[in-house]
Length: 154
Length: 77
Image (cartoon, each protein chain N blue to C red):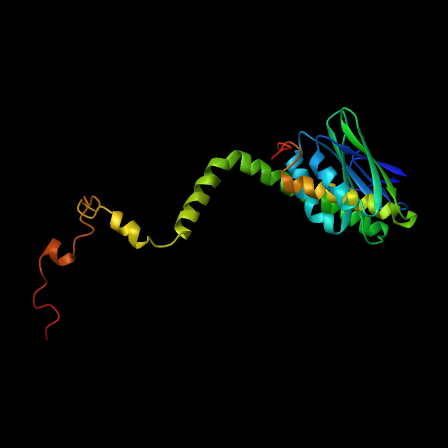
């Protein structure tokens, strides 16, 4: 078992003899859902075990399904760390911008629902003013500035 | 025989149960639990499958837990 280069000694281990790597992260900095999101894609290529210590650390152990050399183990550990960071960042963005994301999503979905049906059109109130037009933008040029008589005649 | 320990804050009990059910053709299981973990004794019916079953059981329990949205979801949901 050896420490992984580029990681704190007590955070990551590579056991080339046993063919596994482990990463220990703070559960407060890397919430459970982020850990789930990071390891989910790896279930197809590795055996994954999670554990949690009493001091609030989550231990993630990966064991590649295929035989792997130390370089492949290091790459897997690096991939896990990257996925973890991406998932944590996404979770943080959702937490901070949840309302905005929800509003944009709602608008996108309502736009994707397509044109109103005949039943919807039947329910529309077509008698009232469509909208206010204080600048006269909806007026035609001729109505606003007088008809352009004779224009264009040879 | 080996013992797998599934932390209760990381694994759903229903997912662990479902994983054991999935592999009951290939192994026998005994479950004990303490305050923090479910401890599952795994005994493969064929010794050469022991390690493979332990690892697949772990993956299966984790995958189902994630699908369920974590262990906090009401167990009767």
